[in-house]
Structure formats: C-alpha cells, structure tokens
Length: 438
Image (cartoon, rainbow, N blue to C red; front, side, top):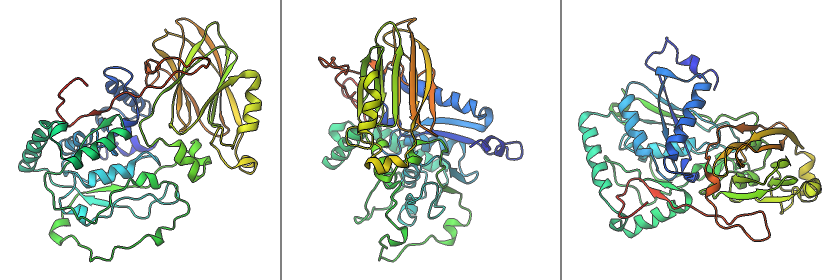
C-alpha cells in the first residue's frame, strides 16, 4: 500500500494506522522473548514503508484464528480510537483479514446485538474481490462498559485449564493443535447465541473457484434488523477486498495447490545439514544449491507441513526436478506434463552469506509466499548459495532472520540422512492462569 502514508497526511490529522501482525500462532518460539523480536521486525518494515511517527498508532501481534492477542487488540482499539470514526481493515489476500473481521464481530469491539444481524465475512471465489463491503457497528466504550469489560478479563485470568468445562477443554485442545499461541475471545455484553449457528474459518474458503456465491444456501428464518436509533450515530468497522501481491507465488497456483502451500496448523521446523555440492528442494517451488563452502551448514525450513522437502546432490538435482515436478514426490505444482506447460521455470539468484555461529542463523531465504529457509553456518564461514524460485515471483534474502535460533528446535539426526528429527514446541494459552512451568 505505497499510497497509505500519503492518505494519513496533515489533512486528516486524527487518522492513524494500527498494524496487526496476524497468524503469529503458526510460528514456533525459537527463544524466550521471540514475540518482542517479531514486533521489532514488523516495526522496521513499517518504517521502510514510510509508516512511522504519529501515523503509526501501534503494532499488535495476534492470531484471529486461535484468539491469541485479540483481547489486547480490542482494548487498544477502544483506548486509542474509541468511536472517533470508522475503521477499515486492509490487508493482502490470505492474510487472515476476514477471520480478523469475524473475530472482532463476536468480541467487545462490536455492539452486542450485531453478531445476530451482521453477516460474517466470506472470501470470494476470485482473489482480490469481495461480495460486499461488510461492516459492523463499533460499540461506544463508555467508562461503565470499560470497567465491566476489565472485570470480566480479570475474572477469566484467574481460571486454570482444570476449571474449564469439558466442552471448553475440547475447544482449547483443538486450538492447541492448530497453533502455538492460543487465547480466548469473550464477550462482556452478549446475547444468547443461536444453537443453529455454525462456526467456520472463512480463510479456508480462499480460492474456491468451483463455488458460485449466488448458490450459497439462504437462511429461511426471518432476519433481525437494527433499529434507527442503534445506527443513526454509529461508527463502523469495514472489511475490504484483499490486495493481490503481484510477485506472489500463490497467483500461479490452483485451488488445491494453494491449500497445500498455505499453512493451516502450527509450522514444525525441519532442519537439514548440507555439505557443499548438495541441494534442497521445497516442493517444486523453491530450490537452494550449496555451491561453495568449507564446512557443512544447517538449513531450517519454515513452510506448510504439507509441502515436502527433498535433499539431493547437485549432479542429480536437475534430473530430480525434471522427473518429479508436478508429481506426488514434489507435490506442488501438481498435474503432470500438462500443468508444467503453463508453469514458469525456476530462475536462479546467487547469494553470498557469512556465518555468525552454529547456534544462530545468519539469514532467511524467502520463497515468496511458499515459506523460507533459515541458514545457520560456522562463524566467519563464507557460503555461496544459488536459490531458485518460479519466474515472476519474489526471492528475498532477509537479514537479520525472523527466527534466528530456529535450528535449535530439532531432535537427533536421522542416521544415514541429512535430516534431523522434528520437534514441536508446546502451545501457550495467554488467558489462563498457569499451574506449572510454560
């Protein structure tokens, strides 16, 4: 959004941007305090984009899907913006923006009767478009409402997992399987939820090319409506069309392929030790050749758990790609020779890195939206790598890396292979009182 800073100029001094880093639940904690580091990385990206100073209200890390950080986001919105004006959700396609809208819809940020009246956000079959500009009315955060909300949050924070009902425990365990960071989004002012209401994750509907929105089932029951007094002076929170990134690999993929590439559960890091002359494939969407170096280096893959990683030698790499691309072995893309006729070839980019030690990655190699590989090497060791992505997609070297200590999250090396056993860190629930160590 290069025009965004200009829209927040002197002519609109009251306006500001609150940046939300969503899907933080998918990333494992590589060390204590990793969320603070992630927030600093987002702040640096905002500064590079020209978003700084008074225009940048705050940066919040959340998971709209698991609820982590959402109560804090609601409190921050109510504190900084109150009901001074309308709020617009802006974001790229598949960033979880519609899930964020739906979670705010059933939170204390929304008027209590609105969830029974407002449609939840869905994702259009075509990326970058929406069926409607959905909106919900923002609740006026009066002193009394803020007090009652704080009392609810304090009471919930005293609970332990053992005090939850069996249904709440079941839901919590499901969220723990999906993400590393979990939180509960409650409502202080709530009407009884209809038993017929069905929850769903709208982001899982992304890129559903086969479904015509006009064919969606209609509700037969009579629809409630807002009264005139409820909306005459209301401020609204709007969902907006998702923004399509031009150099994104997702633009090249089919619906089935996108579902494999986009992580829907906590990412489990996969670490491999490579010697010079070895090659790592991330499906058929990314490739790294270790061209030159004196010692082995560690390559930690952060991508959807459904994407295969294959390690081979430099002499065999081209043959592996030719034989297995669009087949089950490399999985994405899929569809055989016919699919590859329209899929762009991989193009190389040489990368030189200097290691800073065997416990800390020096850089990430990002394969557009397919994931990234953190490279860890011996101190002062110079590596010459050659990385490939499909033509027309972005390949970025990120320094410093997002999760520099990620190679430490691994088990023992698997005998006779370059791979280490994977290890999944435990989940953390922010709203419950812990009875033991994290």
